[in-house]
Amino acid sequence: MELIVEASPRRVYGNAHTYHVNSISVNSDQETFLSADDLRINLWHHEITNESFNIVDIKPTNMEELTEVITAAEFHPHQCNWFVYSSSKGSIRLCDMRDRALCDAHAKIFEEAEDPSSRSFFSEIIASVSDIKFSHNGNYLLTRDYLTVKVWDLAMENRPLETYTVHDHLRTKLCALYENDSIFDKFECGWSGDDQPEAKMWEARPQEPHSVLRTRRVCGGAGARAQRGRRPVTDGNDDELATDALDFNRKILHVAWHPRENIIALAATNNLYIFSDK
Image 1 (cartoon, rainbow, N blue to C red):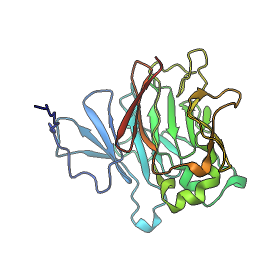
Image 2: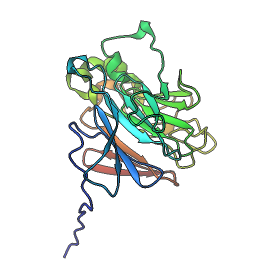
Image 3: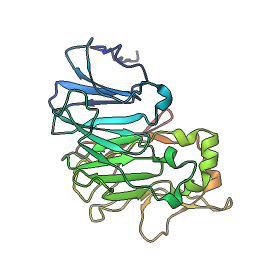
């Protein structure tokens, strides 16, 4: 007889969101948590299921005046009064709940000035922040948009501390991605468990904390060879991949890093993959 394990909810927190919930984050006080949808962020006490407090509301009186939506939100890992939320315009706002009950004014805003010469029809779409994570020590923020991963220092608002390009080869494919709606995919990011300032995201080897793991080097020709392999970015001698051979129906949309070990869980379609450095 096969043993089947089923999960059942202990509590259901309902009737507080009109739109799809995109984020849930537990506070460091271990008593409250937030939930966020496109236009509102609510604060809950875990013992009270039928009542929440609205702490962010960006819904305009006239919905035709709506220019951005909330894409992600997270509590600070140590300061129970701080939380951040990101928007579809690429900005990240840090709020302090001690300032006011409704955090309609932010304490800090992290955003990078756009280069006017590089602006295109897709600029605002690919600038939308799809995920945001505090570092474990609470000093940095990690954000993910469509083509980059950025590390922000909480003490520096005007530009990111580091920027990693992700799928830069897709810049020439944005029209095709727009037509098949893949340009609206939401990707995630994660911090390593050791949380050293130098080890921001993907740590290839302990002695090379800035190495980013890439599976293949991308070439434009349809006849380019595509070989399997994984190696850190060094001198560019990586395996090649033809951009025309990319299958946009197969993509990794969820990622989680073990809190202490160098173990990463990736989810793609209905498969779960576990990677470790051992």
